[in-house]
Length: 216
Figure 1 (spheres, one colour):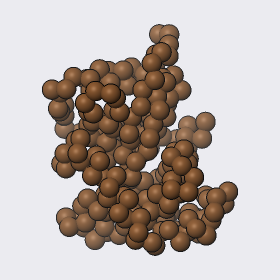
Figure 2 (cartoon, rainbow, N blue to C red):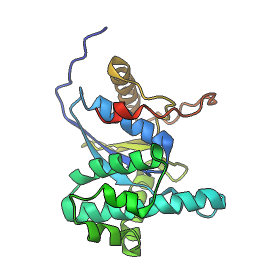
Figure 3 (cartoon, rainbow, N blue to C red):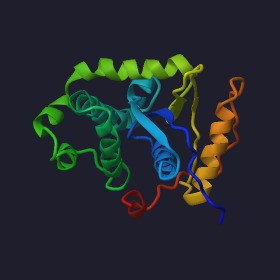
């Protein structure tokens, strides 16, 4: 196995997510794996697939994304009260509810926020004032990557021109050397300002990683 050494310079990215998206979940868990080695600061940003696709999606999917849109309201309320750092933990907790426990019920959400101002956060689920914050977050992504995107989106925050991309879309979460190799190759591609797109037809469905891996 090749030796994995941490890069010396700090990097910062904006990672745009909706808790409903399994592809986004996999990419986010890959980023968490990368952070074990790389000096990578991640600012987690809201991106509502309900708002993005509400005029085109089926009623079934609309209902699902509306529930996680409410989760994003709560996340933004938590960010406002506790700072950016809380978003990482909340996305993980809510992602476990959505992708493993298959629930978006308020009572289950409540069980994940007991150490915070519970009533304040529960009230925010149905408070539309947070929609403006979510939409502003989405606009900050559109300004860099355009509007023909979904989740995940990664934007590199550097002193140079900001560059960002929809993706990468991964069916399985790489670990160890594979995770670092993918990150460094992705990072190298993203440093070239004239790079736009690589794509192939997907022949695998998404495979959510084992919950024990998420809780390591």
